[in-house]
Length: 332
Ligand code: GLY
Image (cartoon, rainbow, N blue to C red; front, side, top):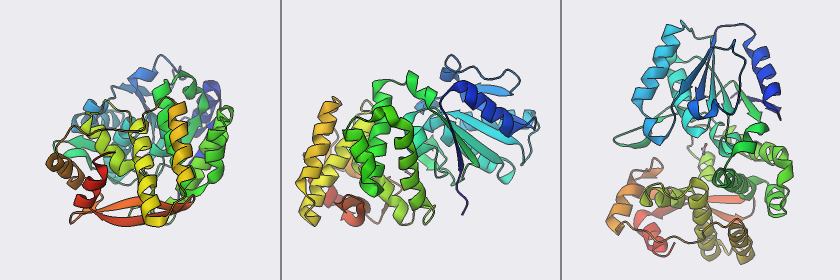
């Protein structure tokens, strides 16, 4: 299976040149999150369309707007469709492209740290409907991903932490140097951290794109994290929620696999250093939490595929009954 080709740059001018070379006067459209238009000035010759992006516009209505533009620009399967934005934009533009004429040519420019290290890679696309988040979607690998680290200059602390937690997750799954670099505050070398995090993900994707096995490792911290996000009505950020989820996962790994408790202690100190919370009390009742977990795409017959680690770089999937999971969450 062919994974995306990645191009790096540090400055928007270089990204602009990379896009010019790639488009090479061929038929194309660029969809950009409207919030980014004041941050990046693209060459006016590009056919650029701004899309209003937030969790509440992540719906079929926006997909239809995107399809409409594709038709009005007379695009065909070989036209170059480029999405510039965070995870919501890449999910939407990815879905619309994967279904346009049964699949056109997608490339992504992630504008967030989280997008650069995780969301843009691996072809997950989708949108929300009344049945939940990303319940309709496809796996559709972008041809190219352009990573420009100048986007990081304008990110908030919360957005930076979203990416740092996802990079740490990659470190725990497959590359302990990422953990060392982040704990030692080597954040001036973000490009190296991004490259290493992507490599961990690609090593997993090449064996299991459709998430039937190994790809589930990428959910380390996410089962509990998603519950926290939902329970808090999304007032808790993704990184913060996944951070607490990983901490709880390490605690369970200690009791099930004798994981050295220093791993949890060091991670907890790191969260404290970032002024991130290390605990969360759920507002929902047990039956409401059960309902939320049951709607998770990774749950079958009341069993959650839950990711733990036996050690750093040794992830493992266990089957957790929803009831057992709820029990350990009482004091997440
Ligand atoms: N973000 C997890 C995955 O791509 O599977």
